[in-house]
Image (tube, rainbow, N blue to C red; front, side):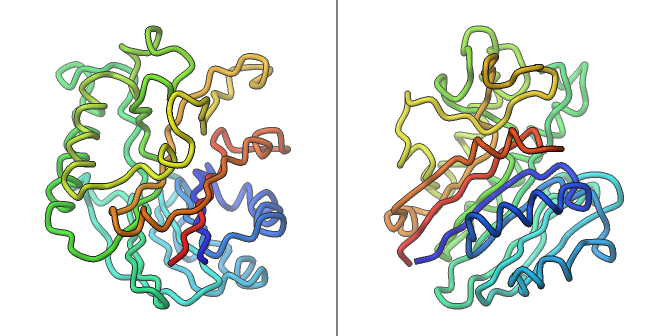
Length: 262
């Protein structure tokens, strides 16, 4: 049994106390972090090692983006992809040594505020990023898991109001359709929705702008754990740790954790 968690931490150095608390209380075997916002040399590697997470793969950059996968079970870094074709640190892939499963940790671009690539180049970069991911996924043969902040809430029940967000970046039809093509390219199974079926309430992000995020509850499911069909069939449990959104100096995202009987 292997437990895998994903969390957009929004600065790992700033929020290392929250990460340490999460690891102490929930103890996933592997934790994939996005938006670490630090270069590898300043990543808190020793702090993770002291918590038992001695296997680490870090792809970071100064002040922005960045991903890291830390594990207390043996793994090794396999590759990094530049799906934005601009050198940003948005992906790291590892192999879990005990079972041979590939674990891909990705931070898809947010895409700016206007869902029009002619007006907003960032939106076009997001769609192009997803197309490059799709091209890559078509050639995959190894059993795989892909996790991270996809910055897209694909289903109507993945947002607080489908109607209100249809023209808001992260839930527009073109993003949903582009993500669906990526999903089809490898037959990825949305493990979160496999175990928390739609239309059950399921969010992973709430804006900092809401004074009372619980009362407001205008959430979106931007974070995902997907797997190839052979691996998804072995998923036995999935949790969303909403309570972390109440912690001091919290991230605006909360962790997801899935258990696989591999």
